Length: 284
Image (cartoon, rainbow, N blue to C red; front, side):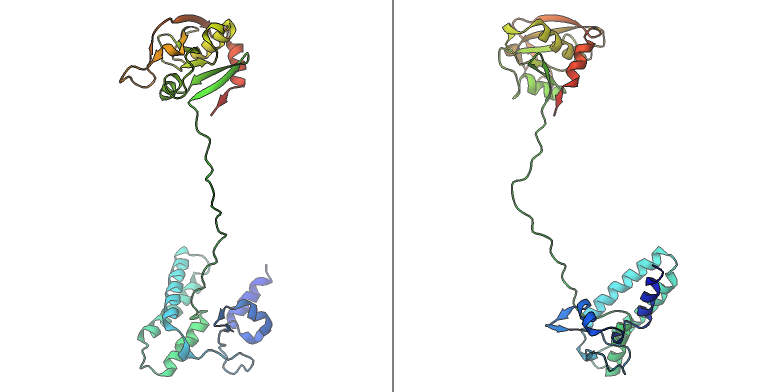
């Protein structure tokens, strides 16, 4: 990098004089205007190798004023940031404000030398009257169906002895699971810790064909996800058709009717079963 910086400084000192470059190379770096290549006028009027500079009378002063204002704002920001180049930015700002004063005082009745002085100062400050080039548009977005995130399920899904067990996540989810769209079939089994708040549980299996092992595993889950903190927990179970929602009841509160059984589980003794269940749980 120590070889690049002096070269850039040299370009700044000579105001990007065209004569120091081959025209074929410079043509690639300047914008096109009305199918003709426009080159910035050289500050050396005696340079015979320059292309015909644009006459000062043809400059668009309105565009020049806009670009000058924008450059003054940018220079103010650079000065505000501080740093080792503050003095350089201050000097640039002084030249810019001087040019701004010249433009403000210039009118149609001003002598041609006034306009030539403005154009010369603008070129030396790296300004021009070229309209801003439109920014290239990015690739066109392809329209199509929006990808949708998978819908959240109101329950955790467990599997024990090839039987699916669903456990509600919170009060509103319990309603969805017990009396809402995700409720079990009429003859499937519903469980809940007796006398304590907790998750509703459904065994996706007919009531009359359920094994004691599956019923015990589901009851362990109902006990674990309840607010009963004792080691031995009583769990109520019944058919899903016996579960209903009282009018105006708060989320998670349901009413049981018909035959309701009770099974007592020991969370300490059931630790291994719960560990196996949690190892394969599906949560969405």
